[in-house]
Length: 565
Picture: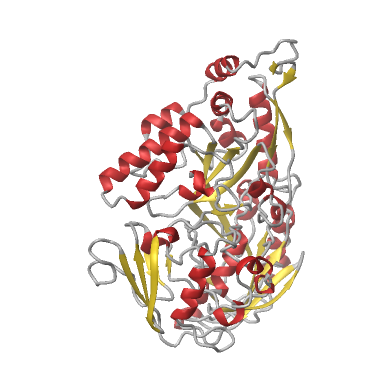
């Protein structure tokens, strides 16, 4: 029950000129080894493979330990979960037979007992049956204090778990948790006890399983060539529809320009979260359909409050006032993103207009707060100082993403306008978003300002994992290390409040605290751009954490007759 790091979503202006290809290139565009294209008028057909180009190579294939976006896309294909969201924000069952509710008896009237029924006949990729014992094992792993999970939010509401038979799972909660159905085994998959029972506790972090996993989903892990690609093959025993494709390959290409070229030449069939400013080049590529998906995903800045300078609320607030989000949206993203005053969507019932107003761009207010905090430019060099020490901070993001790098340059100039000197210090994704054990920059707090994206769920957000004092790493995702008693208390209250009106009041107050204390500065909401070969049928982008691979078992190759590459 955690949020995902979206580290592959930078959109940059092309730094090179790209031709649209010759006529031969256009007519030769084919299916990555799929052979002749089938007539789809009779429905889905089997065969072929799809190659997806991604910038980010996973550190591991474990959603319990790591929330990197590509990790999520791959794990969706290998593992099974209780629930997922479709492309219209509808919660749908996956490993379970139906979504529990009060009406169908799956949820007790007091919202403290949740009963799930697993599908019968589900098997792990090695043929062993998946049972309720595997669910219990996975829950025990998540709750093991020796395992540094991304989050235990929601799981910590469970008082007991019962497995009366192989297909029944009963959770008894010690307090109401209104989002339980939408979050239980939504972020985290069910794991095979028979393969991991010897890798519990601290040993779980280093299990070889995370590099060569076995699940019960529509595709099986085949191979992982570091720095090159990861291949999955069809699971013929899958319990759901399909899979129709023989294989899905994730090709790791850090450079966005190279991804664009390979999409043009047909070396990849899809470009995951393409450069938003490549639009004119993408539109010129024949045989490619461009999907534009508004996302529940926001780019933001985390301010590390354990830095003595940033421990002062006035300095954090000054940085917030000095951040011109509109300039970033226009100059870097050509207005194709939406400015985010808060980390709640404007349409959300929890959005606070008064908090949003206080999150305005105001250089005068920024300078006043710095002056109140004792930071003044005493030597006339344009940088404020205190006790002879200039105010200098670093900003960090994932390296190799031009739009983020350009945004850092804009932020550096914006902050210099109020006398704050900023140094850019970027890291590779596996370093920036790495686990606590591996010395991840965010997890270890080895940063001043960090820029990355979070993906929310359609359900009312419970933000304990991000902002509660109980969620400071390694136990949680409170990377700013922000500890605020009222906020922690409100987040706990909001997580258990079933009255919608009362929840609105709680979470609107949460927004006010986040603006006034400024441990985080939301920047903008993303629009995902996914160019995909027209031959891939039933590709339906998903704006939630279920990701674009949520229905990949139903993908198949078809479309108009073209020559095979």
